[in-house]
Image 1 (cartoon, rainbow, N blue to C red):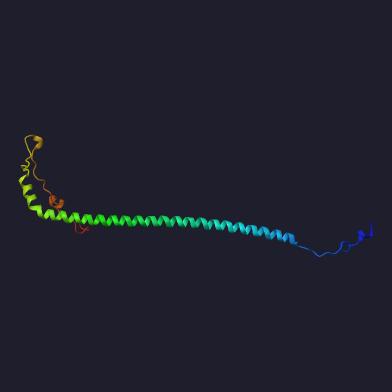
Image 2 (image 1 turned 90 degrees about the vertical axis):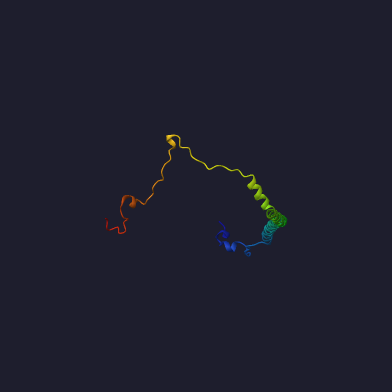
Length: 151
């Protein structure tokens, strides 16, 4: 055992200032942080690019749909005008030829005699009309107006 073993540890070692951070470690940490930030920026740029592409595609589809609607509306307008023209022509022809059509229909009519039911067989006997009356008239009673009093 020597005298240095008996000395406290503080005295035996040379005193140096306590360093928590070294510059090299801090630079490494900051570079890693910068790499992470750059990766995040690239990811966000890709998301923005994807959304821009989707927006462009949506606007293209909307423009095509609006063009289709305009074409369909033009077709509807044309067909409506044509329908109105045909309707006017049909009404004019009906007014012009209605008397002639009525004469033709009366000339070529088919007359059918009224139907008479044969009653030759016993199963085909004619029946009398059924006498339908209210139940109280058929039984000779009066309707109940006071539920507490029965006659």
